Image (cartoon, rainbow, N blue to C red; front, side, top):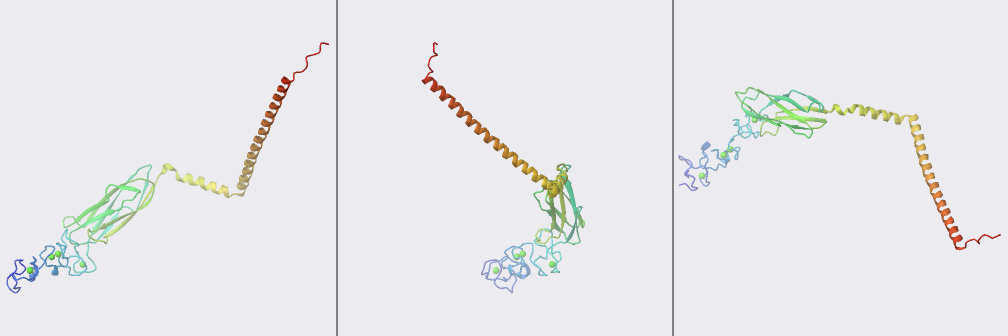
Length: 275
Ligand SMILES: [Ca+2]
Ligand SMILES: [Ca+2]
Ligand SMILES: [Ca+2]
Ligand SMILES: [Ca+2]
């Protein structure tokens, strides 16, 4: 009898017996013939520490990382019997702690980072730095493979182009894909200046001005200057007013003369006497 029709007989004690006689299943590993196996890795879902990950089925130390540490497997545990360690471990050392750039002389910069590991099994590593508005990088991620042929130390080189002056902290992070915890990090201080702007002399002028303004003699001088300016303005306004009065007076005079002329035309003077 094969009630669930998966090819395994209902008698579980016999050859090819179905360990799950009422459930259709394809599992074969660990004598769990005929039980459901969602990820198809031959391990029954009930016997699979990672029922949806085909590359892993056991986790002996129970830290959530799989015992299969082959390259490309899901969350490979490089320390399968140590619950406190799991992903590959390494130390990152970069060529610079601080990079200073005078944007007037150059805009590009490079640095290198070396990852050293003592993890025995093969693994992938990513070395990444975060792009920021102060620069553009030619490549932000370097992918490395560590295996028997590569040795335990590898170096990558990064390059970037700065876009403006300022300061930034470049954070370089290395991690094994799938791991949320970085293997190691390194930070580089990036200081970008521009010597053609001559920021120092500007600030020197500013401080002289500031000192001058705080000097009592200078303050008195500024006071007198302000007063003189005010008086000058008042005088200008006064002469403008006088000019207006003068114009009005002349207009009045003209009008008076015109009126007198009209009057003399209307009443001409008597002709001169013959005597
Ligand atoms: Ca079955
Ligand atoms: Ca499975
Ligand atoms: Ca699995
Ligand atoms: Ca472990």
